Amino acid sequence: MTPNSSKDSNKVKKRPKVRGCYQCSRRRIDCDRQEPTCGKCASKGITCSGLGLRYRFNDGIAARGRFVGKTVPVVDSSSKDKNRSTKEKEKRLVEDESVAEETQEESRITQVAVQSEALFQIDGGLDHIDGKTRFSLQYFSNHIANLIAVINLGFNGYRDLVLPQAEIDPLVRKAVVVIVEQHLSLQNGTTVSLDPTAYSSLVRDLITRSKRCAPQDDESALTVLLLLHIREMISGSPNFKLVYGSLRVVVNALGQGLDAMASELRKFVEMQILRYVS
Image (cartoon, rainbow, N blue to C red; front, side, top):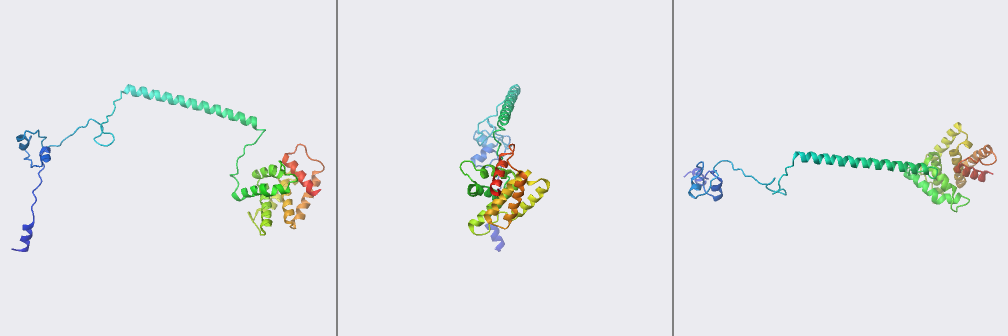
């Protein structure tokens, strides 16, 4: 016997699968595939479904899952229209009420703002100021304002008038930064620079503004000159004579007495300048 023939003899020939009716497949027997009813089902008295496709119908909307046994409700078209109309009316009513409430609230807020305008100004926050400058303002309030004020009981002009102006005036803000830099440098025994260009740009800005408006007529320039004078007193630098001379010119231009119509900040600054120069 040849090797090929021995291999062929060892192979088991599988009987082809016969697809018959559903009932025979459930009984695991070969269907004789007779139509319309197979003989094996007929001999056993079983109702044969035949060889065609089996269709199954379910009472619900799904045969498995969470929708098993649930049916789709049949909604009358008139009922749909009625519900839609009701919902639209409710929606319009809610929108009308919301608009009315918003209008009343806006009117109330406007009235309160108008009545309170003379009492206070809304604080816009410090989002427009970088972190180093915010630190400088806080440091000035905590460590410097109480040292340079004559009286630090309750009201402090440097904290209550100059700092609020620094929040909205970049020129005054730079002056606060250079004072804080000088104070930190003396406290730590080394040069502290929060903004290396602050002092030089501050001097340039003062010179530029003086060409458009005299310092004695410029509230911001007066405030900056006062703060620079304080800085030079702290540092003892040669620039002290220059700033002091500028203040002397301002005092001579201001004349005697204070303007009764001037702002609280200007009155305070003029009093401080007279205190240092007179």
